[in-house]
Image (tube, rainbow over all chains, first blue to last red; front, side, top):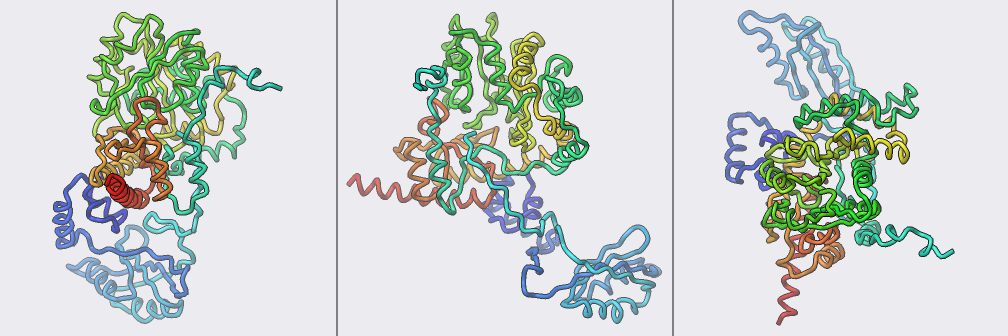
Amino acid sequence: MKKLLQLLEEDCTLTRDQLASMSGMTVEEVNAEIKRYEEEKIVLGYKAIIDWDSTDREAVTALIEVSITPQRGEGFDRIAERIYQYDEVESVYLMSGAFDLTVIISGRTLKEVAQFVSQRLAPLEGVTGTATHFILKKYKEKHLIFEKQAPGEREFIFV
Amino acid sequence: MNYDQILNQRIQAVKPSGIRKFFDILEEMKDAISLGIGEPDFVTPWHIRDAGIYSLEKGYTKYTSNAGMAELRREIASYLNRRFGLHYNFANEIVVTVGGSEAIDLALRCLVNPGDEVIVPVPSFVCYGPLTSMAGGVPVYVETKAENEFRLMPKELRAAITPRTKALVLPYPCNPTGGIMERSDLEALAQVLEGTDIMIISDEIYAELTYGQHHVSPANLPELYDRTIVVNGFSKSHAMTGWRMGYVCGPEPVIRQMLKLHQFGIMSSPTVSQYAAIEAMRNGDHDIEKMREEYDGRRRYLVEGLRRIGLPCFEPKGAFYVFPDIRPTGLTSEEFCERFLMEEKVAVIPGSAFGPGGEGFVRCCYATGLKDIAEALTRMDNFLTNLKRKQARDGN
C-alpha cells in the first residue's frame, strides 16, 4: 500500500476521498496528516508541471554551475541563501564534485538570463566562477514526459 | 461445401463469447470508459523492452531449444524459488510456453483421455471448459459462492469428484472474482484429494497480484506437490501481455509429455520475448512491487466507491478485478452491462460470461487509470439513481 506522501508526490490533485481509500486511512486522518505536513513544511507546495514550449509564452531555462568560497562558520549556506532569494532562481542544489552549487534559473529571454548571471550572480562576494548551460529542450521532468505520445490503442480482447 | 458437416463437432459446440457484441458497441462509441479489458494498462518496463530490442540488434532471431532457452528456465526456477518458495529443476521440469494459455492447453491435452472429467470452479476465466472439451474431456463446473469469497470449498470439491475425475483446475488468484486460496483452504482440499490420482492444474498467472498476503501455490504443500502442474507467465506480473510469454512447471513425467506436444504445435516460444523475459526475471522484481502498489490503491478506491453507491462487493484479495453484486438492481448481469453501456458509456463485463455462478455479478477491471475509475464510479452512481427512479415509476 502506498503511503500518503507518496500518493501526494505522484498526483496532488487526488481528492481527499481518493487519498483516504488508497492509503487505507479515513478522510479525517488524511486531513489531519496533510495539515501537519503543510505546517511542518514537509509538503512545501503543490505546483503544475507545464510545457511552456507548447504555449505562446517565451521561456528560457539555464543550469549554472557555480563555484564559491565557503565562508567561515557559515559554510556554503550563506551564499546559497543570497542566491536563492532572487525570484529568477528556480532551484539551488549543493553539489559534490567539480563545482559547488547548481543554480537553475528561468527567464523570458536568453538576454534576461545572461544579464542575471553577469550582473547578479557572478559579482556576488564569494562566487569565484560560473558556467552557464542553456536548456535547449526538456524531455522529462519529475517522471513526466514532454513529448505528446499517442497512447497505444488498446485492442478489444476478452481476457 | 457443407462446413457444418466438415468441421470438428467439438469446436462447433463451443459457444462463441457473448462479450463480442459489447466490444462492437464500444468500438463505435466516443468518450466511453472501459473497465472491461483484463490486461495491465502499464507499458512493459523499459529495461525489459530494451533487452528485447537489444536481442534483435544482435540478430538473435533463430529458434531456441524446444523447452525455451536454458538461461531463461534457470531464471524462472530461481524466480519461483525466490518469490514463492517453489522448487523446480530448470533442466526437465519447466517449459516456456506461448502465454499461460498454451500451458493450460498442453496440460489438459496431456492429461485427459476421452470422457475424463475436469473440475472447473466458476466463475472463472473462460478457457478451461472449451479446452477440456477439445481434449475430449468433460468439464464439470463447480459454482463457488460469494459468501465464501469465491473460494473452492472442500465440500463442493468432494461432491464433484467421480471415478472419471482426472484433474482439478485451480484458477487462483481468480479472474473475475479477485478471490484467492489461502494455505488453510488448500490444506482442506488436499484432504479431499488424498488417496485419489486427481491432478491439479494451478493457473497462477495473477500470483504476483495479491494484496495483504502472499500467494500460496498448491505446489507449496508437500502433500500436493506431486499432483500439481503450475501455470504462470509474464503477462500480468510484468505487464507483458503482447509478448506472449508463459511457462509451466510440474513433475518430470508430465512435463516430458507436455514438451512433446509443445514441440509439435509451437516449436519454441518467440526468441525476442525470451530475451526480454530473462531481463524481467533478473531485474524485474521492483517493477512488480511498483505495479502492485498502484493496483492496490485503485482497488481500494473502487471497492469503497462501489460500496458507497450501494453495490455490495467482497474485498478482492487478488488479480485486478472487483466483482460487485448487482442483484439489488433486479437486472440480469447482461441487462445491467448493456444498459450501463448504452446509458452511461461505461463497459463492464457480465458475470454470466464467466460460467454458471457468475450471474448476478459484473466484473470491473481496475487495470486502468484512476481518473477513469473515478469517472466510471460517478457514471455508475447516475445509472443506479436513474434506474431506481425508473423502477419506482414503473412500479407505481
